[in-house]
Structure formats: C-alpha cells, structure tokens
Image (cartoon, rainbow, N blue to C red; front, side):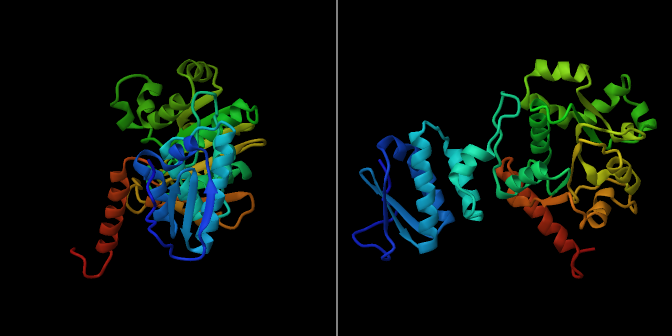
Length: 337
C-alpha cells in the first residue's frame, strides 16, 4: 500500500526517526500512489517509508526535524477529525519547506479562512501567506507581481472577511479603465454598462466567494461598490476596505488621488503587475512611483510575487518565465534590434 521511500536493508545515517500513525492516517498522508510523500521528499533531503503503521524518516538532521514536526502535527490534526486533500497537503508541505517557522497546524487551523461561509480560502505559497498577514497588520498594502499569483482574489477575500466580521461597513473595488472619452462613447449601453467589462475580474472574485444573491443585494445597497478609478476623485472613503486593482496603469496623479481618498477606519490594498503597463509611452506608472516614494513609511507594506507564486495552470508559470527571459534577452546589447 505504501512506498518504502527508498529504504533498503540499511540506512544512510544514524539520524533515523520512527513515528506511528493510524492506517487511515497513512492512507491520507501518502496520497494516491504515494504522491504526497514523494513530493515532500523532493522538497527536503529525506527518505520516508512505512512498515505497517510505523513511519521511518532518514536524511539530513535538520530536515528530519522538520518532517517529524509535520508528521506529529498531521497525526494530531487527523485524530481531531480534520480532513485533507492531496493538493492541500502538498501546498502546506511546500510552504513549510520555504519557511521552517511555519507549521502544518498553522496552515490548517490559522491560515485558512472562510470569508462568507461559501468557500474556504487558503494561501498556496509562502508569499501569499505573507500578503494575507501584511493586509491584516497594515492599513495600506501593495501587492506587486506577475499575473496569476492571487493578488486581487486574496485582497477581495480579505475585504469580504472584514465586511462580514463588521470591521468595515463597505467594500470599494476600483480599477483604472479606459479614459471616459470617445473610446467609451463607442461602446453600447449606459455608463455602468460601458465600464463593467473593465471591472469584470473583480465581479468574478466576488461571485466566487459570496452567494450571488447576497452579492447582488450588497451591490444594490452600495455596501459593495465597484467603479472606475476616475469615480473616486473628490471622495473621502471612511470605514471601508478599498482595493485598487491593475494599479500599474494609474498615472502618478491618479495614484496620489487614490491614496489621499483613504479615510478613518479604512484599509486599502493596491495590486499591480509592473510587466503589464498599458500607459502611453513616456507616461510614468503611478505604481512604480509609489513604490519608491512610500517605501520607508510606517504602516505601509509591500509584498512581491514572482512566477513561483503563480497558482493558475502550470503552463502560466512557464509562460511568465519565458517572457521574462525573452525580455531580459532583448535588453542585452547583443540582442536583435
């Protein structure tokens, strides 16, 4: 039933550790075709095998201690009736390998949350966890990095969580849209219908996390407001959770305008991808400028994501990496003009 983790008749070192888990727990821990344990072995310098209910761990002493803590936590969580999918376990293993201070209990008892009762949310990478912690601890957080890393989705999840816990009285979601000029004028419908396509990703996150009927009612009552960034001018946004998405496409003036809208009792998250700036050539990105201007201010945190944090299809991670390599090559003096 379980793989032998590479064990033969002898062991590599004197660091061998033995632990026991119930048979049902071993089934869950090892996963389909032992994929969970094999994955853990690739993350840490260890070999893990099973003889009956007994687990055998061999390898680097520091890594053995990490695995020992993982398995001890797993046994206790399992005994308490917690359930796990293979993907959830592998996500947790990866984060623990990146940050040894993190634990399986932290992941399953503290890091996961259910904003509205519809869907549980959990960080899938160490940077996602840092991002959630930063949002909880600061009034203004910048999430900067490539597409597909969960910047917007997790910010919306935290906003919903704050709303349902009555930490704020409303949510305001905004994005820079095309200019409110002739390009919008060519689109059919009233102004709201014209700008909705630009804000659709924010709607998608809301409807994924909250029952559609609740979202519709909150939109009607303006408890949740989704609007182009231009609509924020002249307002003071108090007692609100405010998210500025796609901030790489703000101008310096727009970014300053947005940041000075934050009122008492409010929290703001700014997300953006500096590799996808669509501003006219020569126009400075407000996100890039804010990154330098606000870098050393207390109460403001910056969290950076890379292709390693991409949580979409595995091809997306490869595509992001390929484009970064291509961009670096074009910057080289010998690159093709």
